[in-house]
Length: 241
Image (cartoon, rainbow, N blue to C red; front, side, top):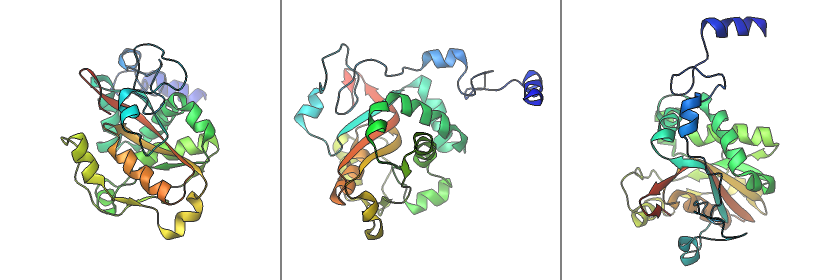
């Protein structure tokens, strides 16, 4: 619109990092620093491979310990470049960033999106939701489901136990922290049974939270549970899986 173009000349659109942006997201310099996972990845957890190992290839971690979810994909690595915009969504009262991350996930997990019957977010405990006022995973999952024409199930999975923050915990500590923390309410089982579900979150570190959710969904009768996140953590020598 003409009036909008005029305003943009006076007040140039700002990117997530505060720099001028014509894309409504990241400025060009910041965009170039995001490590998007465009190359070959593990078919199980989405960890990036250095080279293409063929269709269906899985990393050592997935081969050693099968996961509760069928497959996971991440749009980018969680590092200095991606951390700030993700934390703005999570802690800086910026739920308006959710649709941008939904676009990222839709591209990175396009094969999982194509196979899904419904999309749902990793839930927050009610006490944490009250404090934060919104669930950052839901702010990504909702526009993704709407754009892809999929059912959106915001309350089909609940966090029945208030867990500690996962930050700073080992892989085993994270798994213990979320053990039996999630469940499907009896009244929502009909929405889950026989469905192929895509679970959405902002960041994956060890995958413990995603596995806890997937176990609860499979127990309730889900035919398949896949996971898609904005970013996943990488450590020296390989990804934390």
